[in-house]
Length: 339
Length: 203
Image (cartoon, rainbow over all chains, first blue to last red; front, side):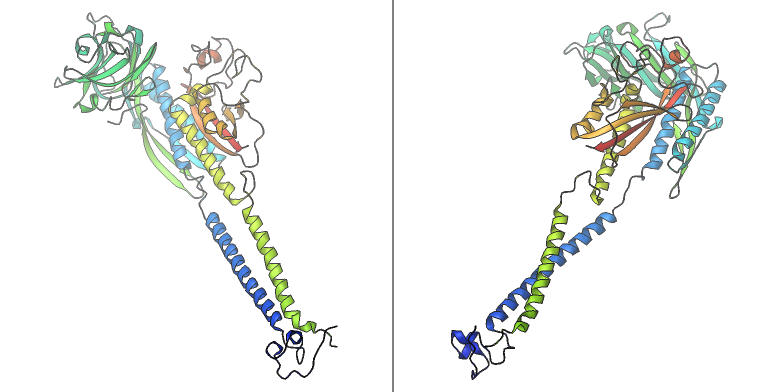
């Protein structure tokens, strides 16, 4: 039972009365001081927590807004994918057709045309699944005819140790020499001109560029060096290897190693059309292959085996989806150097 | 004696109730926001993981195709036992990529990061045939796929040990014993167009 004293002179018990009087008020409807303090505390807490909650919610909504509006970006590269598939398909087709050594250019061109039709049907089916429409076409007129040349690294009965692979060449692609690393002459940069096997490019004004392949007498690596007009060559790259190693002149590679500048520093600096020949073939075993575009006509003369080939083809490509329309013409010449 | 005036406290109780409610709500919100988002939990951030995995898979296919590893892996087929795995059973790989450069790239990009992958090869004139190269189990709901087409020609050599001089054409015309998993489906110099599909998902 609380003691309640009536008749407090002022309404505010806290000032006028003793401790007992704190609990009492004149009308019982006023707050006590302690009540007011609790009220302030609770109110302050409510406001603070509400502000924190507001901040958390605002942050969450900003975050989800941000995430939701980011692009999905998965289908962006599809047109390029179609382009790559068409180019690669046509490239493999052209090279495969050339390796089949068809009797004449007409047969090769027809085979490529038929193959592109097949590729068109294939791509149409493959991309219909994803809601895209593709069309790949080519014509005989958009193809350029040339020669596919292959030969062992021998003089092939020419009498000396040199043989011409292709004469009067405008463009070359896919020039790869597979050499047996055990058969290479062992020499160095200064001795290469006299001893090493080389592929020589000579233009009409008698300027030449040579690509030497030899075994370094220093570390035994297969070494590729580039020379100009018969002068001492500069080493471009070397790699240790056993057995057959592919020197990809147009692809700037020696086996699996990159060989930067191999083509650009040699044939890339030569003006006009040129002859491609292999020289000092007694210093290497292996074989060479290349596809060439003649300077005139549709075939080159060669002291090895040159057969009718398609050098390149221009394909018309279109790809269409609900959101995208992509049309382009691409010239396909697999293994053609940039320079 | 006076009855204690409970009416005084009503406002304070109301405010306290609100404070308690807000505290509970704030606690719940905080707990939800702080929950770890695992790669398998359905959430918005998951989409980005999927995009990333798809990009990695696409790039892997692209680089492997460019340097010839992909084609070499597809041709690593034993035509007499009709298997990718020499004489072992099953005829596809289950614990990782095949033992070649393409397999090493797969293991490095996915296997080592606890990402599982299946590799299928689709072939045939209407792309209806499917051969499994790698199968690491059933993909989860959050799996992504990437695909690339590889053209193989009639004169392509197998890369399986002991069959390096066997061409696809010699298998299809019966010159050599055995059978390739895809039939000669295209005209001319092209043997078939093999569509390689990688399915990847987080374990």
